[in-house]
Image 1 (cartoon, rainbow, N blue to C red):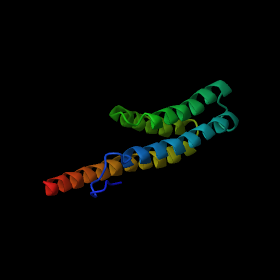
Image 2 (cartoon, rainbow, N blue to C red):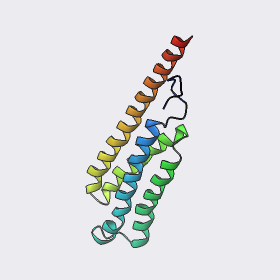
Image 3 (cartoon, helix red, strand yellow):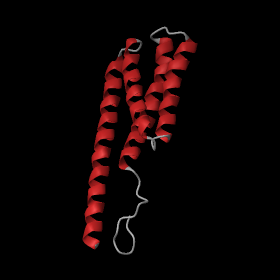
Image 4 (cartoon, helix red, strand yellow):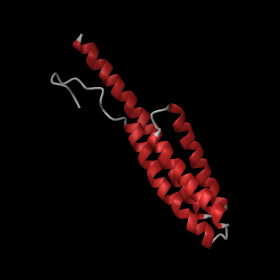
Length: 130
């Protein structure tokens, strides 16, 4: 977005926050779906499966809404580790967790790069304007 002079406005959405929130929301669905798998295939007690599967899904959704704080991104990496560790109960989660961890890292690092380049472009534009 830009104002009448063509200057970028400060109301642009954070690409990092948007991409990371998307990864967490999709991961919440995958983690929620591990609950019935844990109960039926892995013979995990229903209470434990619900606590772990739906608990991680809720954590993902909460973190997705809190991505304005920098510490939440570190918590996102912890969720990725937990998703991979869930592979000890549901073996397919080793692979799926690794995929989500790669998506998370890519969204975080690429988002940082985009934000850094936007800031540099904004600083250059301001310097050119005097």
